[in-house]
Length: 257
Image (cartoon, rainbow, N blue to C red; front, side):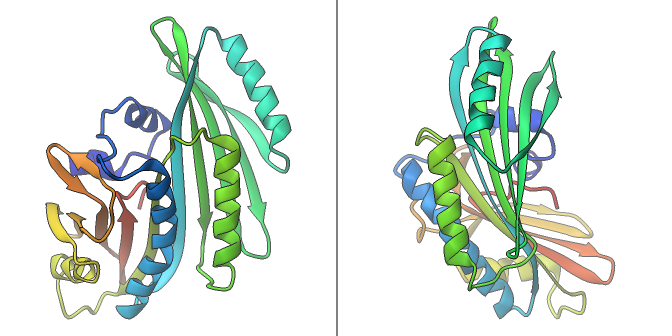
């Protein structure tokens, strides 16, 4: 179960399965809007936790998705796509997908001097002779600069308001690395990160060079379910040559690492 949750963004088709509910649902009581804002605001919290452990931040990502309307034909989807790409200026668009599985368009826009990349993906996949559409949004940067953060957060909110219908689910994560000369093992180091957020471990995955711990903290009023258990924070650590790669995510990690 954890492996499925951790690698939902390895393929776009996996992301579509999430829309259909194959990987869980948002927890009751954690409103969509509140969850979106919380996911963004936790990026600097994760950065602070990583720096407290002397880890060097390699980058961060905010990802959001929303299942949208059902359409009768591929032509209707392409018409909607044309309207959207004209509305969203500054993106470089290209077609993606396999028609027997899904079709779609992906737009990328890079921003300087903050070094960020914004990616919008608009998809349609066949369901019962019709096409279900979905919108994906990803905002990422290879570094975190406190001076840029207010502007970046404002940009994300503006972007999401323009492409979503208020039903999006959002996720965020921060990637970093530590020296491999840790006094603790990977599992103990992961638990030490979770203690900073008063998070109680729910699921664990232990391998020789990789550890992932899913947890829940009452501090945040949102989460997703894995079976009957709710989680809203994950930490993953991997031995990567001469260092340890660390990823913190909420409510789960949604990028490959």
